[in-house]
Length: 284
Figure 1 (cartoon, rainbow, N blue to C red):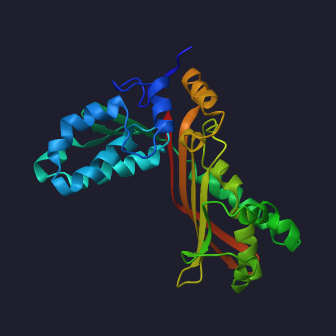
Figure 2 (cartoon, one colour; figure 1 turned 120 degrees about the horizontal axis):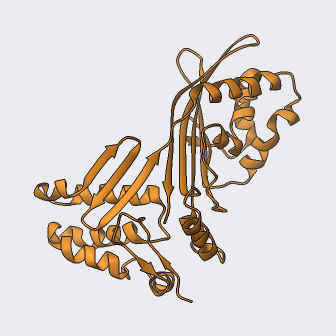
């Protein structure tokens, strides 16, 4: 039975068949692009100077490739726009209607939903978690933090944007600050901002950066991304794609970014979520 995947949802005339997927899987490099990407490339190739054409063609592949995450597709879209001549830039349309951002280039269309975040709920929950952890043992405090730290996954943990490879690096912080770090910085933080069903991808990108401001406040920057594109080489990818196609309320991809500030006055905690985004793609 042939399975087809519409990569950009019901609004687009982009369709990738099972044969196209197998072609992409067996391709030795990104120059072997599918028919949908080829059609787009034929229409815009003259928009680029000779020196930029090779790179631009690869970026067009990224727009249609099921192995490229939605976040990376947006980056490819932006890079393509930067490469074209000034008179073609308006062809790269970026628009927001209500809570939906649309990225459109001729037949290509990608729609991302900016979901509402309940800042108060997140702040109340995180404040409670840190408060109840203050007098626990170090082992109890570390919990999931230690598990995630030792996974050595992409992104990982940084202090002042510098990679951390040893837990001893966190000894530069006070006991209360370490409590906040160990309590907040783990994969469960995603759930404080996400309001939809989880993306079913078995892979993720997650990172935490910890720093201190001049006023002594602790700042934690969180990034979390899931996309079934990350599972493209896994044996269950087609099952995941079918699940997304059959369940329109299940996200194909999710991305959460958040910045959390924490300060202490003895055992009094001042915690605020200063900025956060929860961006979702529904449908294939």
